[in-house]
Length: 270
Image 1 (cartoon, rainbow, N blue to C red):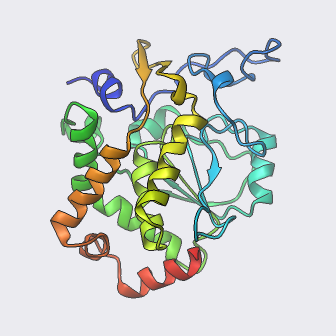
Image 2 (image 1 turned 135 degrees about the horizontal axis):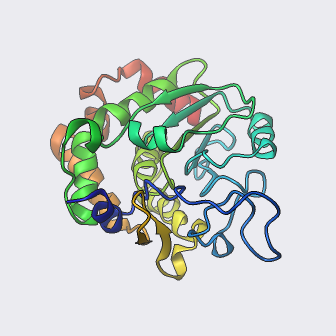
Image 3 (image 1 turned 90 degrees about the horizontal axis):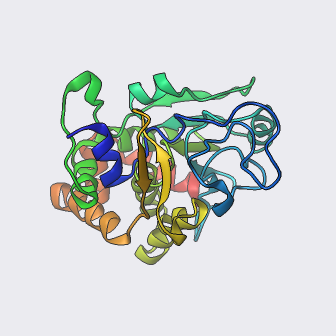
């Protein structure tokens, strides 16, 4: 299975930033300069403060306090203006769930923004490990639950630290790997299943996927389609975590999180 086939199946969209429009002022009604021309941003809902970062939004929903946890796609297209907006939000930590290959191809921009960068790949890097990913959205969500424990646990530990927030958790587009990780964080904060799923599905609206698949160019320059996220896949992944370790908390404890860190994170988020 090629990476292109995987992207088409599960839509982690690792290479959504592979092709950008040329520098300069965008044409009237078109995408802003520097935004990938194969991702139809005219159908998305960019965050008013940080419109250059795909799927950027405050994850402070339900009982979770706003201004503590943010989620997004890659920061590879961050502009100086966007960096100033993140500075105003007080961002101290960025957790990047992408593979090393993705980070190498499309590194996050900083523009002088000072934050702690934590690389916690949720999926194995095929280029480095040779590990094949399964085909199909549901199998990949189960695979993420089975192989991503240390990345998700590492995110919990980082955010539970005294200097752990405000934080951004992101992957390439912020809907699959980020969606699963934030769902775990929301569970720890006491959100109901309905609240967790509702925030997860907001990625479809923010990326324009509620109106159908969105085209993008993959790392090989081939056009693929990004498809909407589905609640059933997220719930299956969470159920797999419980099956493996009895509970979401047990899953995290098995991957190195302490009870003290769980308590510290809950206090931080709620």
